[in-house]
Length: 209
Image (cartoon, rainbow, N blue to C red; front, side, top):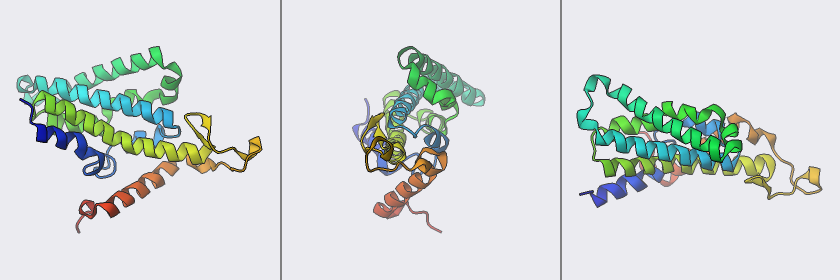
């Protein structure tokens, strides 16, 4: 029977207490690339969450039958298969977003969060807990992506989900978009500020010298 306390811990812990981006500094590359728009950030969040959850679930199911010498290969085969499924679904039902995400959906295969949870948790834990751990870490990753995407799209173009929120000067409004926020380096600064804010609220996350 699934441990309720453990499920709550692995589901909600990664949101703020053990966030994969803010605390573990994992998955940063895709956070820079797919957060120019809030829409792509949400789709990437969903894709990573599904892949992390189901890969952890399937790996946990067969963990006792995987030889130690080939466990990484088996994990990558399962993860790659799920990424292909997600990529094909996006191409079939959300082609425009799929084009915007480009190669970054395929690169979920090498995402440290997905591999890390498979190796560190799913190989040692029951399937249900592993599935919830995957969802929790996917959502923890997504919280940062959505916040960064929100700030970058709003300040960079005055829009959210492609809809004008701040009327720009070019269209007779008052807002002058800041193009810097549409460039990848801006995501570094935003993520840095989020990490600073989180560690200010939770001093226990600050590394001890």
